[in-house]
Image (cartoon, rainbow, N blue to C red; front, side, top):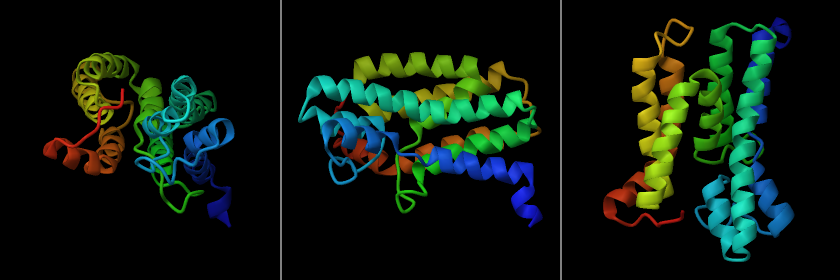
Length: 207
């Protein structure tokens, strides 16, 4: 029973379960009466919320898409801030971040299905590597305006975050950069179908 009373294990479980909350699905069902798990890309993220709800109500789609991004990011950020307030070790906080992203992408409430992890990864990075995350956000904004392809903009922004972090931060407060790269790997892995469509020139413009 020591397993269930170990502080780190409890925080890891909480991080995964909170990360698993499908805010996009909840918002779309509540306010637009649509099931994004059965339409569009079937993802629970903001892009699919925007894509699916837009067909019914363009103005509502933008509001729900933005709300999804904010909530998906906050569910990670708030957890990590709580971890800092409680003086948890940096290694534990980074692990919580990885598990929150994993929860979003493989939700415990959706049979291990989920979203692409971009917003939740943003929520982790903005707390732990804020300067690099802001650089990534600028790259995303520029690419989104020019390319108008959500997946490509997100992947280019992710690359900007990782590259800049290696120059800006002398370590991440832990002995390894693995957690940062692990979050990126999960996001890229979930984008493999998008990458294939990009190569084929079939990826749809959404933004």
